[in-house]
Amino acid sequence: MTADVIVVGGGVVGLSAAVALAESGRGVRVWARDGGAATTSAVAGALIWPYRIEPAKRVGAWSVRSLRVYEELAARPEETGVRIVGGRMADTSLADLDGFDDWAAGIGELREVGADEMPPGYARGLYARVPLVDMAVYLEYLRRRLLAAGGSVAERSVSGFDEPAAEARTVVNCTGLGARDLVPDPLVRPVRGQLVVVENPGVDEWFVSAPPGAEELTYVLPLPGSVKLGGSAGAGRWDLAPDPAEAEAIVARCAAVRPELAGAKVVEHRVGLRPARPEVRLEAVELPGGTRLVHNYGHGGAGVTVAWGCADDVVRLAG
Image 1 (cartoon, one colour):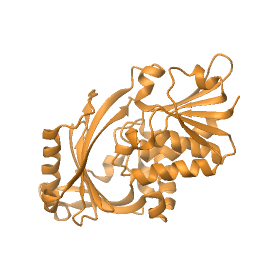
Image 2 (cartoon, rainbow, N blue to C red):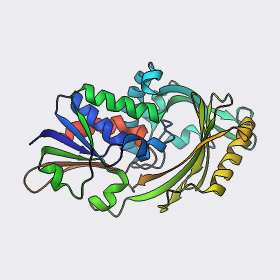
Image 3 (cartoon, rainbow, N blue to C red):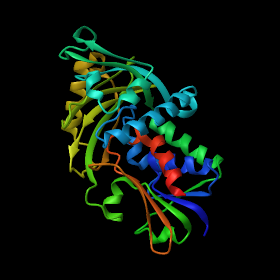
């Protein structure tokens, strides 16, 4: 054995679990097929809000725990990439947060608003101040924090869990969409998301319109120096190439909300595949030979939102 735990997967879910394990005193190694910038997490909008993830009761508890962590990290935004930002969630009421009551109660400012406080065309919504994460900064922060706790990260692919099980007492599966083939688990399916990054013309509040089941989303997520514009939710789509027509439509929808975005310079086009599943799989099983395998995947569009709460459960399940 060369480690107490090997975490397979280097996105936000895997790195958060690895940090929690390492800071609990375990020897931890992360095996990541892709570097941080190449993971689905790097493409995430990363507004801390439950989206396309079940079951609600567990998600609510994970979200509350994660919210507390992000609020602490927001005290050092330059280091962590986490800031508390105000904004509006369209066509949503407090009643729509049923199942996430504890999470909603934990938000410092959350209230219903009418058409007078919404962009044209939107009759109602919620105003909230919640964490918004710059994923490029945050993923590097997590990597540094893991190294400081004695962990390590290696770019390494696996074809099965026997490989890490030969080197660690516990293996944690945080492979996201990769779990579809690796486990294998046919319940894991992609939900394709495309976004456009533009220079920030002065936008300082976020806006999201994400009707349940809709494939066309509208979101404006401001970061220092740039704004993420989205989006889409193409269930079952595997293509990673940006669609120019889709990008044009995204900018048009966002400019209807914030007209100053219409002429903003495009910095980058991004596409990511959310690892959707009917329910998150977070449980421990035993492999032949006695190694414990902890599954932690299927977080849909809310991996960042629940990462720390799930990490606490991973530490408990790791034994």
